[in-house]
Image 1 (spheres, helix red, strand yellow):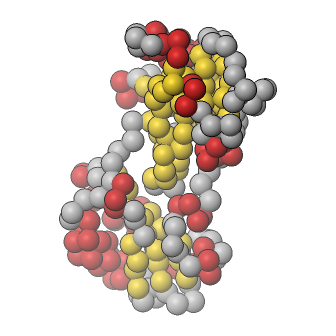
Image 2: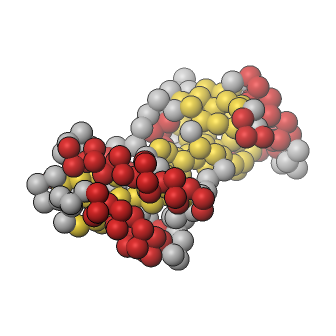
Length: 219
C-alpha cells in the first residue's frame, strides 16, 4: 500500500508475529476492496482489570492525521490516537489455546482510573495492599468467584477506602450487563463479604453495565 501523509513514519506502535500476520493477510485478501483496507487495532475498554481490544478492517484513508498508521510487510495497520499510548510495544500473535485465535500481548495495563471510573481518588490512592482489601480479595477468590463462574461471571475489588470501610467492586463476564447483576451483588456477594469482613460499611458496584459483552480479542 502506498504510504500517505497521514502515516506516522517509523511509529510502529504494535508488532505482529509472522503467524498472526499470515492469518490477517489471508483474511484481508478475501475482502473485495482489500487494497484500500487497513487492519485497525484499538483498545475497546477494560474488563477484569485488563484491556479488551477491537480488530477490524476499515479504509486506511479514514485515518486521521493524529492516528498512527504504518505498514508491516504488506499489511497496513492503523492505531487510533486514543489507543496509541495504551498499545505501544504490544504484540499481536496467534494462540492455539481454546480453539485458536488472535491474542494481544500488551505490556501496558489500565490505570486505576480506567479500571474504576468514578471511584474517589482517595480510595484509588490507597491501593489494594491493606488488611481489609486483602480480606475482601480472599473472600472473592475463595467463595464468590467460584460460585458465579458457573454463569461466566467474575467480581474484582478495584478500590477500597480502608478508613471508611467502603469497597468498590467491578463485575465482568456474564455478570456485566446482566439484568440479575444487582441481585447477584446484594444477595450473594454482599452477604458473603459482610459476613466475613465485618469492617465493611458499604459495597459499591462500579461496573459499566452498558457495555456488558465478552470481547472476541483479549490479552
